Amino acid sequence: MSKFLEWVDRRFPLTKTWNEHLAEYYAPKNFNFWYYFGSLAMLVLVIQIVTGIFLTMHYNPDAETAFASVEYIMRDVPWGWLIRYLHAIGGSAFFVVVYLHMFRGLLYGSHREPRELVWLLGCVIFVVLMAESFMGYLLPWGNMSFWGAQVIISLFGAIPFVGEGLAEWVRGDFVVSDATLKRFFAFHVAAVPLILAGLVYLHIVALHRVGSNNPDGIEIKKNKDADGVPKDGIPFHPYYSVKDLVGVVVFLIIYLAIVFFLPEFFGLFLEKDNFLPADPLQTPADIVPLWYFTPYYSILRATTESLMWFVRGLIVLSVVVAFVRTSKPTAKGIAALVGAGFFIGAFIFTPKFWGVVLMGFSIVALFLLPWLDQSPVRSIRYRGWMYKTALAVFVFSFVILGYMGMHNPDHVSLFIFKNVVWAQICTITYALFFILMPLYSVWDRTKPEPERVNFK
Image (cartoon, rainbow, N blue to C red):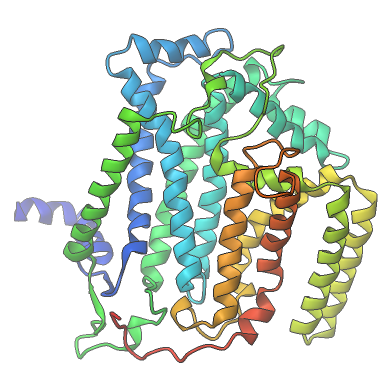
């Protein structure tokens, strides 16, 4: 075996790669529960790729037979129902672990220097994952898939001047049709997974270049022994590779329990309308996307004319924050010019357009976190009440937005307000988390970070 490894190493850096990224990659020794979700995201990605390969062997991307081919997989292909449920529920599992993985970053400041590129690549992965999921959602050609795609693609039409042409280009037709199904299938099974795999590779390489963050938010590279090994670090393998196996086992127990006993998961993972074939003449009673898109969908629906006055106020507030945080006259001039443009546009363009803008802002703001967060410390352990309160309100707003996105906006689900009013309140608090971050992250009273990691 040693001779074989020598032969391989002369032609491919196998041992070097193993040591660099596993055996001799030193990670902080105080990782906790929140650090399971990165490896779990890798696991779910593998599950999705493997099950997707088997599904494509029997799926037919044709508007006439797509739904029937899914039924054929479920009823006639040996173990086809299991593969289909593993893949369908794996999509929801992917977003569960990714959302928790990103929340860990907000908790411990994993977006801060020197990990800005790691965070940005992670955000790009998140956006690509959303595109991959949306395209895959259409493929079963169920009635909710059909009408959901119709509604989401029509949002491109709200973009001034080029919107209608862009929506037609995405569909490949004037309406969602066979052409849409075929191009979404091509992107879902070939183009986007290749992009996703490449981004995951870059994400891991960038992470291992600067080193992993930890719950204390301090750099373990600052304290090394005589051999250059971090005093507060341990090799990723075997310590964390074994530790992650515990997380994998627990995750698989929950994941497979849902697959075998509750695959629809109360209509969140598989909607009842998707068990009916696509029908252009039969609109579902409530057209809603899958649960992991509902917070953004709720922001879109919440943007009415009444909310536009708050949007205009947020634009003014953003300009004021930029002026306060910027000392350069050129930057102040740019902020004033951009703010004036947005303020005038808030009166010219329709609420539907601004709903698309706010929905886009809710995602783009994640990319700006490394520069919005000005706190002298990284971890929430050493931040003050301001950041802790802001993060709690942000998470609460995100959850309520997701809940409201699943229900009729004119109904009353919580207390006395209509769902749309709750969605508008949470849209504002969601936006303020990012807009005010340059201020409250500086004003917050912090505790001094320790020199070494601790386990308290």
